[in-house]
Length: 168
Image (cartoon, rainbow, N blue to C red; front, side, top):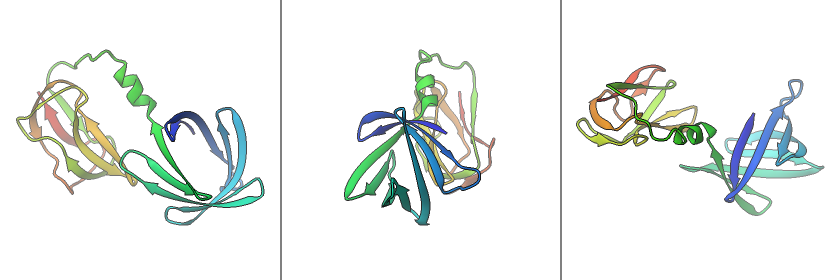
């Protein structure tokens, strides 16, 4: 899996693969430099990593917009850059025409509703936040318009494809 990340604000390219024979064995290419390690989750959010014969304990803390890693007495902020959102932002701001039904991209739980029926919204404005697999995903408006119908409520469990909001 390849990721573009910001490591303490500096851009970094990371590609990670796991061995099929030994799931704890990780091969990573970081900015073109190949690194091999053994990584094991020992508690939720705590990992033991064997790197170049050294054992390192890494504590991972999930924040709203990033990951905070504590390792070897240092703290690192990691932000995953979503290439899909970058591609969407290059579209030139072309609005979709007509009524748009926004559905849940995957099964999850609605953790925040950011709009109300009748509210005016802009293209790419956040409508609600759905949590799936411990990750929060902001669902954004595909067009400028008015929230015609709102089917989601905070705390509600939703299925993939379920209509959450209608923008007219």
